[in-house]
Image (cartoon, rainbow, N blue to C red):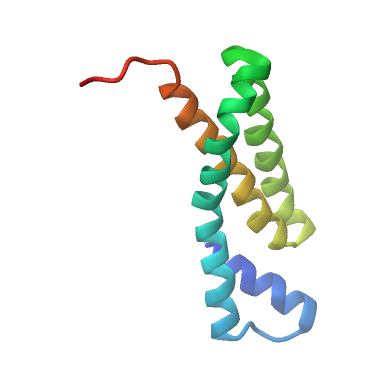
Length: 110
C-alpha cells in the first residue's frame, strides 16, 4: 500500500513512475527509520525521567505519537510521502521511549 502511494505521488509530481532503485531506497528508509527512532527514544528516557518524572515523561511521549499520526493521515491529502518517512522516525522515538520507560525502575530478575 505504501509503495503504491509513493509511486502514485511521484507520478503525480513528475508525470512518470518511480525507478525500481528509488522505490527500494525510499521503502528501505521508511522501514529502517522506525528502529532508528526507537534507538534515539530509548536514549532520551533517562534525562527525561530525571527532569519530568515517569508520568511527565509519559505525557510528553504522547506528543511523539499523536502529532505524527495526524501528519501521516494528512500526507495522503497533501500527496507527500516524505512526511510519512519523517513521521516513522518520530513514531519510533515514541516506541523507544515507551519500551525503555516501562522497564525503568523495575527490579531486574537474577
